[in-house]
Image 1: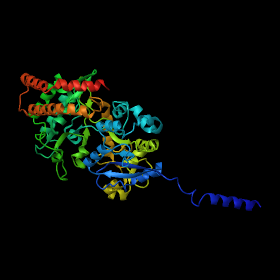
Image 2 (image 1 turned 180 degrees about the vertical axis):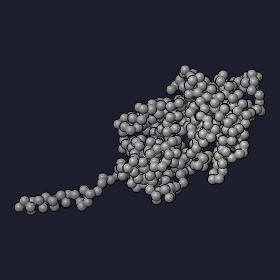
Image 3 (image 1 turned 180 degrees about the horizontal axis):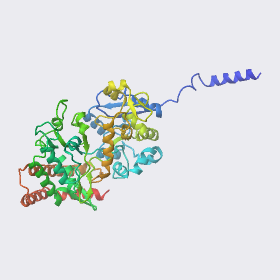
Image 4 (image 1 turned 90 degrees about the vertical axis):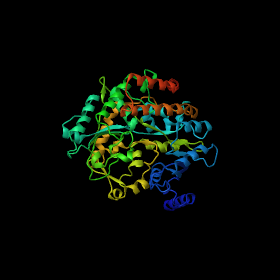
Length: 504
């Protein structure tokens, strides 16, 4: 009797719940997503990243990928609140500060700040540790329209020195401007590449932009606008007393033949060396990565030079800062902001960043018993295709999340990568942002752009004239220089940035 009752009860369950209900996962929440990605081989519609994230989070995206930057910019400008065509999410969005403010004001983008504490614990933990990132993503009205990619360490324009040449000449890394000049002179005169020819280029650089990274040897660091903050006041580096010392030093290096004679004319692709039989000719070079301009067998011999000391202090310009802003935003069309934020918060973990930029464990790479990892042979043999089909990292726009450096340093056999990452982390202790993160409105940008265009160009051209010896460095030439800056409204320029700083 009990057996029949059990059968009847089971039949009742089967009638109420169709076959397969218990075996199926709950349906994924579906949202629309649009963004910019011009990476070769990558098609978001087939890229495995989104599917892998769906398996982990239950969030499905119908994606629309723009591969033309101008078309994506035009699309963002045309977005309107309430439109059926408005996507729920902007991903790899390349949102400028001006776009964020305008799209917040129009109602296209929502304020993410009220949701972060409850929906983004991983991101919030980083923001508490790095308050400068929180400042960077907060708009002047206090809202947060877009989330960042966070680099650790941030990208810099380093001075790379050929360690093999140092070893050949029994030299140490220089610690100040004089030792740096002495090292360059040894590179020029003592045949460090041991080929019997005077073909050495002591220091490679690209124009005044690169040279200004040497100004730290005289206690000067400034941003691309040549400004910096000291004791709450905005100052202009070309008007500082030590600027003349810096320019004179560079002129002396040039006259001694220690600077690349083509440094004011070459472009990066022209100084790139790929000939496998070529002999190294650069003793030091100013560039973000030596491997960007040299073949690997050369690049592995270069090390990052620690900042040169001035008055007992080492300080260096933080070129980019840790936050790359505008990577991810949610529009007013989205029906579940919290769910989407929980999705993106997973990218602010090492596991999530590895999925975006390295791949999936046991599918794309293996972790060995010693804790190191390596790609599968099939991945290595066709890496570009793999990267386009399985990873979302790369291209001309960044995804939200964090860098994978902590994981990359564990890559099997990657001593070069590990060494570079360790050097970058040590170097990071000396970097400082000359001016805090800021967000300009369109009106502000239109005000300052013409001032910067004329001032910035004039300063760079004058540096080149002095260093190349086309114009004498003298009291008269510097007085004329400062008078010209005043004529170009440098005081108005500084007043503008002082107002920006005061409003932060």
